Image (cartoon, rainbow, N blue to C red):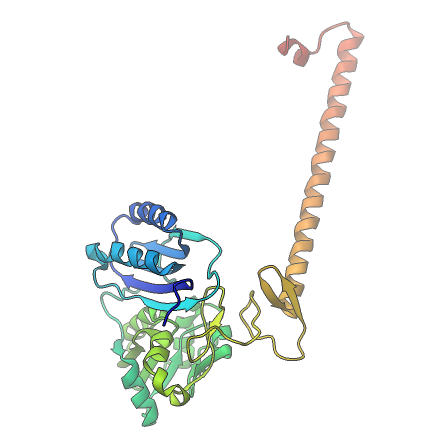
Length: 328
């Protein structure tokens, strides 16, 4: 049973034409403030993508508000729960895309066939001849992925098309199943793959989160290995969709393994690598600030010296300085 005092976390997306994203932005800003919600909502002409949290009742009110809009009447939400505050603040942004990939594709025109979680598990159980492609970033793959999944080895999603061209260009006749956290990246990943000639392309319906929900009764044999990165203060969830028990760096979301040095910050623990980067970044900012301060002092002194010379000239001839006249 879900405790009423837990934070209800919902994630959702939909590719749907939105004529005026800025108008919807204003409405959602007002609504989420009224409902005391936190998280991030991204709007674009191509649709909506979000992960937000709040009380159980307020999240239900939020869902009903969106369902009342014809654009979102069939919107599906993925719910989870956390006994702490999931996000620090509420952001509603308008961007060019709800998920960015350096190729113009439209999932409303073509995308990979949806593969239900139960069917995907059946394929895995049967060792079906297929390529399982992880479309997420490298740090997500390293924290957890499906058995036999291919690491696309990318730092950001906009690198995915180049990886496909370089690594899968000769596999266009193979059965390919793509997956990501909630499904949104696969919409564009498979749209691109279909566009460049891949024949049998599937996407895991609802992503990893839905797969873990659907296979909860047989989680020891569900082919998922490790934890799944989520983009709130939980950082990652395990097979039971509970917050990960691993010590995860809050900056790079990589596991800080036993024996590795970690550093405490108000926002969480950071690995030694990220701590070094943050310290250096802070030093660079201080150095730049000090440099600007010295430049400002030098320019001020130069200006004052110039003014002193002007006063000397005017004083010599018994005249009034123009700046003094303007103040009279």
